[in-house]
Length: 285
Image 1 (tube, rainbow, N blue to C red):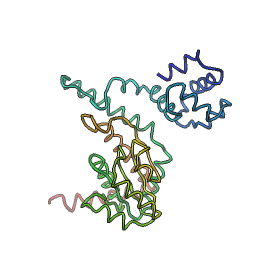
Image 2 (cartoon, rainbow, N blue to C red):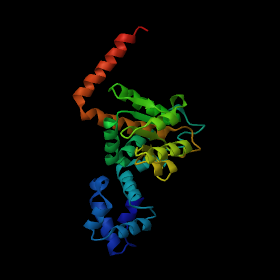
Image 3 (cartoon, rainbow, N blue to C red):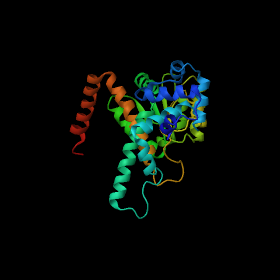
């Protein structure tokens, strides 16, 4: 555990101890603590902070903060006891399966909440609000999460299209104009066609957005805004997409809620009218 490493600082030099002490004394500020702020408060530098992370066996500052937040919140206990790829075994009882999935899904939502970048959430929400047309590109379980997001937005009188419907993705890309929102949903980011679409959009001044777990994919490199969700399960070799589906759905629900909250009373009125129209007009069909 990283917390144990910070507390057992016998092998640290004076600079490392200063960084460790500051982190331990400011655990409540970790989510908003930037590397620049940590360097300033400990009279060090960004390069020193990176070296400190490497000494702890971490890839960088982001992993350090995420690991600390996870350990402090207690989520590491769930991660240690429930396998996201195989959360139950062939001999598990009904009660064991129920318990494992409940712990897994609750833990995924908590971890997603911790890792979501508030600034990028806001960017995507504002893009939805300002876009005359919204195109969602998604496949598999991501498509299902995208459909829920689309349905919510339609009830707010937003023009939303699931771009993969009818195999018309290329046509939507061709007809896209600056100001339109092209939102890609892909846990892995491994979609050759999507990478081509995003590149074509970027060349024409249209800034695509992506929600994914992998920031180094070809698709991510072509998108202007990349919102990361937890990399909680393998792409291949799992019982089901439990973690990624819940994480993506939660993220889209947060974005929808941010949009709704921009004009709460008016959006409530519009949605109420939509629900009433659907129920009263088609309830007997």
